[in-house]
Amino acid sequence: MADTPLPSGSPFDAIRQQTPEDTDFWWGRDLADLLGYDSWRNFRSAVNRARIACANSGYPPVDHFVDQHRMVTIGSGAERRVADVQLSRYACYLTVQNADAAKAPVALGQSYFAVRTKEAEQAALLADETEAQRRLRLRKDVTRHNRTLQQTAQGAGVLQPSDFAVFQDHGYKGLYAGEGARAIAARKGLAPGQHILDHMGATELAAHMFRITQTEAKIRHEGIATKEAANAAAHHVGTRVREFMIEESGVAPEDLPTPEQSIQELERTERKRLAQGPQLGMFDDET
Image (tube, rainbow, N blue to C red; front, side, top):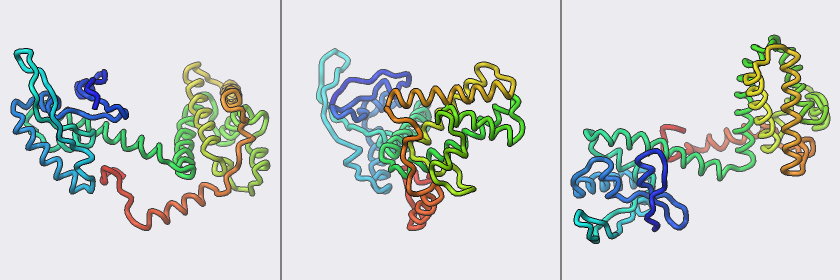
């Protein structure tokens, strides 16, 4: 294990260590000092309670709590070999949950490790996403950000639903070199009533996320206040996103494949999967 803290703003980041495999861990004694423990024995009691909680959660404690010995510098400047424990991020989370709540730094540690452990879990989930899961996530994100864009566009004079449809079409035409929503639907072979966004892969949906968020940012940043200027901004951003895609990947958005399954079909498949039983994460109250 490496023993060099990684710099950051939080005191808990300041004592964070990293293995040669780039896995974060914390030394128990470093954490005990930061939490205000004078006695290693008392802190070990919190660690032992955390081990039990880890096992009760279904995670092997040996994967998160590794007993070690290491050399530490004592008051005289000499070094002494002491017992210590390497704690994973999750082990730290459990340890601070079982620590002495009367100590002021413990509350800070509980907040820090709860947030960081959840962030790490989410990052792992995203890394393991399938194309279908990524499409479902991005489609929801696009819907949510489109609502925000519509609110922003209303301040620029895009007031009626028909106005917003025209405004969106300007963005589509910029991204697809002149193709509006109807032309895109025809090219994809969609039936009337089928939404083009429901028949896009993750890469294409991500391009729309970028287009939508940057169009909103441009309207806000430039103080655009007319419908005509908003339409021009939507077309400009769509064109720039298109240029970026072609420059970076060599593939124009209209050349991306249309998935075999629609978003609605993927949602039905996902509902069936979830119906087979609960899908719990590390925090089973935050699914």
